[in-house]
Image (cartoon, rainbow, N blue to C red; front, side, top):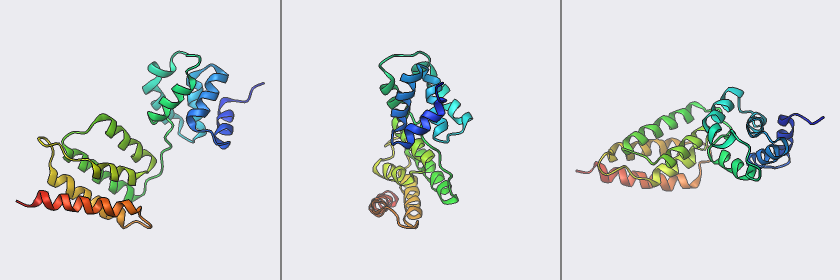
Length: 188
């Protein structure tokens, strides 16, 4: 009798496999892509309803039919899509930062879908430093963006991040850049 897929997924993850590698192992072994992906999500403590929502989004393209030999590639795609992202519990400060980031995104006047996907993944996983640095390196759209609102919002977000215990050293540099840009856009 074989152990349940979730037990195998937990074991693979405990031994240092990435979620993509654990998926590939389970999919090869079980020959059932969807249950293998669900088992990895559950082993990562992603709630079943959330796991099913994420898997429904990519079921037709990646999991509906077994493709022998493509398990590793499928695992990498699932990981890149954020299917295996473990949500963190956000603090009030984290939620305030995300609100500021969303305001900045609106002030951008448009954002590439890939950039937005990356930001959403960082919001889910709590990697708000990466989200801030990404937005600080971007610029509002020339015709549709609001540069003043964009840069002043990022200044406020940067100040909040800089006030956290042991902030990443890159925050201060990005904050200085945002302050410079805010000063430039608010000058008549």
